Image 1 (spheres, rainbow over the protein chains, first blue to last red):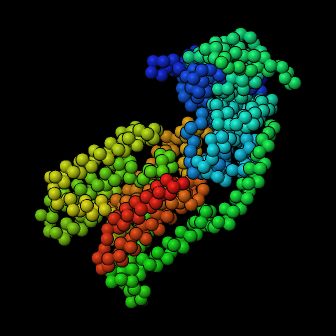
Image 2 (image 1 turned 135 degrees about the vertical axis):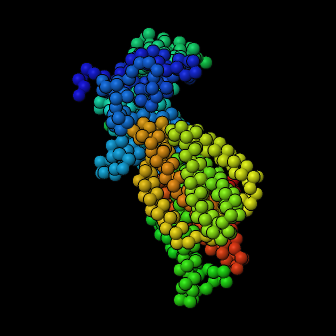
Image 3 (image 1 turned 90 degrees about the vertical axis):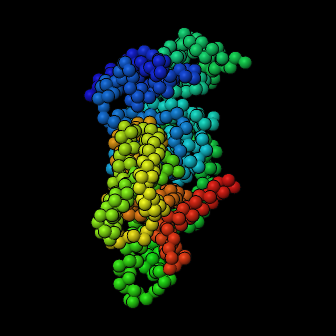
Length: 263
Length: 355
């Protein structure tokens, strides 16, 4: 068992070179249960690749990733799948099986390929589908759904795992404003309940609503801190080529940070 | 965890409830069980028709025909049903594995491999016939052809797997299949050039035929189906997971390379057995899974079983038509399946365009 001081996920000095380019360059970070973290950076900064390294779907050439203090390669695939749920960037999933059966795949790590789902699995599927509001089209084919509907089904699939660590790659893709809001609230709620959430977000304003923001640029982790940290905000504006400024807006719920396009 | 539902979700829920009750009233063909029952009923009536369809037209004098039925019509009818089922099953596995609705059982080099095996045996048989006498050579040839086609199909797929270095990367596997197809076809052509009498036999084989089925064929086909279908259904959640994409399926903890290898092996066994007995019957393996997927929304477990049933129905229907359309003469069944299959895909294409 890990002691409370051990981070849920820890990466040290991750380097991945692809075709001579350092796609991920000396990245170290730690994630603890209850943290709600956004990962941002310009296109091609290496965000998705970093997430895949953290999820154990790719191997770094140097550096190591530890889950619960144990190096990731030491985990069996199924054990790992129970502790860590990964959501891919949308585009790949497309098929004729029903949306509900897609969400049920999230329970596969628990009952195994040859096992049958029990009542607990079905309850987890129901809860995840309710959370992302996709119960209504559970019987429809994945391929027949709109982009936003499909994204909600895939999200429910990742949430249905019930893993204590969520690694999400652009979960707000194709979602309209109300569903984006619903998703961010539910991620924040999961973090409060003890889950560690790390999500790549392309919308900087949404990312600034997280507890902690990681900024990547050309493979490197260039800033890591709370949105209230002025140095982090300055780095954020700089890596995006000053395409926006970050302003503070007073709201009834307290001050909020907003990215304002520099038109 | 909190649940936040946007206000318009409730209206959508109400609309979809109305929609699903309309779909339920729409008929039983849309559920896996309903479709299975319907296909089963069609298969049963086709089997009866198959027992009645002879060279002299249709005959329902079961008692008078008993000898004929037991010796010729029954094995042929059951053989067509089973060979079609193997092709339908194999096509459904291929389409799931490669996440491509145009994948068919022959795409991993099995067709070219079987073709080469047949040509080699025919060429060798031509040499043998000169020394052994035609009758003995003919019998050896028939036995040898089935074995050679089976071995050739498996060897073709094995070569594809070796070239692709295993089943780890599906795209590489597909390309390797194309390479093996081209290479082995070229080899067959070379053999034919050296031994031209092999050409006619190869033609018959390539067209596909249900007319050689005897009880041994039925036994071989039934054994293959009894082995492959339950195992494939057991592994079918893998194909469901692949719908999410390669990486997501891996993230679910599935040992994907091994599972894919097992599914390719099952596909090879099903295809190899069917091809050895019936030759390269066109389109059944492509169309049967299509038909099923169009009618029902189901997981791959049900999809594989229903595709097998649909494939059996398709090939048996084609076989009966091949026997009776220009009786007492016979059409090669492969020509008919190609016409049916091509027609179906054309229809599908037109519907897609109109939609």
